[in-house]
Image (cartoon, rainbow, N blue to C red; front, side):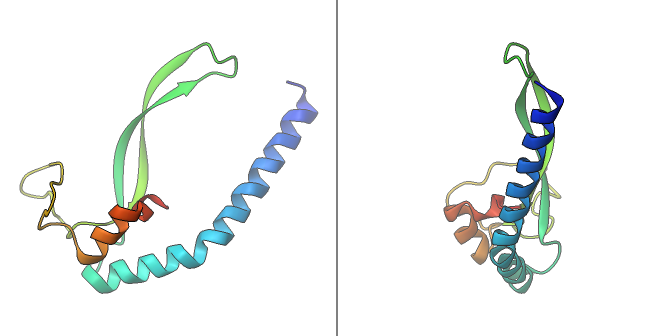
Length: 110
């Protein structure tokens, strides 16, 4: 890809990302306030995920691990005694606002 095309693409990527951040800021701020009022700090939760990294040719695929931020939907230190455990239906560790966030997938907005 030519350098001028790459620079134009990068500029467009940044402009679209910035627009998305501005558009989602009121929703994210409201969710953050609701999480805080429902169950206090911390508001965000860091989760490790697995994904694929594909090179620019689309030929080389590697499995990579990355961290993502989510709005916290469980009580603080919910996994302190047990470690990571999948939540089941009716899990008592899920907060009131957390049930709504999970149902609507808004917990993954950050």
